[in-house]
Image (cartoon, rainbow, N blue to C red; front, side):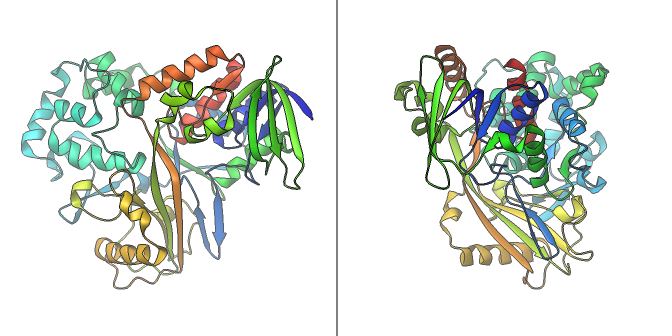
Length: 453
């Protein structure tokens, strides 16, 4: 029987970031997780001369909190930003790779967008903001920029982040910064320019938008957070975790690796688990109160790490390659990991991460490993100009609850979360059920929770 002021369920990025900041304030807390090691979905594996991630591959410094955290952990790990080649992204159109333009001239010259939509773009700063807060991303982009921008810029971008469908995602929740550009400034283009002029605040400048990882892989970030929080504060390998409400707060029961019963009494409880696990975790909450949260849809994704000791295909001189849905390929996109960070593959080799499945291709998740390898052979030989497909590393990872989809039902989910937190004093429902799905979003949320507590 243990007692603590604060208990965090989940030793992933949100939970350990929260723990890091609670430790800095010398608060009394514990972290509990069913896994044997910290990290949640984040992990790094090494095989021979290859080093690959088993979950997220990179993050983006999109919030100042990310820069702050890495500065605080600099004695425990080494932060690294991607090579300058990461600025380039290829998009497939009619079977050919085209560089996604980053400026006005490139936007005018690129074959990705139609002439009609290029002309329409001139009027984008003058179009009225949308009035429907639940307008889908597809409808928003069509209204402001045109069909070709949706098909060959936004759709592949969304496949790369959400493995989702722009016709289902709602920007107010899925891409709040984009939504706010239109609502606050009336325009994507004008808003971006005006916002940049205003960003003289030193704190805001910390959000460099650079792609990041950690020397030795993202798993080292999680180990650094564990060390900072205190290894003795992390109770791992605890199965059958269940929470009950008490007069003094909450009682958490679980089973240790050696079969013993563990009980922890706490005043405050922070849950970072997915929506699909809340009902079993907290049976004291009525099913009807969890209904709006449990409706959150998670898409399944296949992630494959592929390595070559000698690379003989086309140059991998970019962040990666995005594949619009309308191109009808069997992969969502490719990240060129060995081009982004050192030490991921042999000097003349290559390491890449390929993603398959997503919202619109769930059928691919039913394929066995051999069938997946055949799909990869066909796609990579055609797309990356390989004469043969004989990788020295091939690791297939299936994620059943890969990425939550922030759709129109997000409003009801957010309201249900707030209602439960008001009803049950000391309860915080966090994780990717709200506030974004990226690594930067998890770091920001973890810090904000700790600050609130």
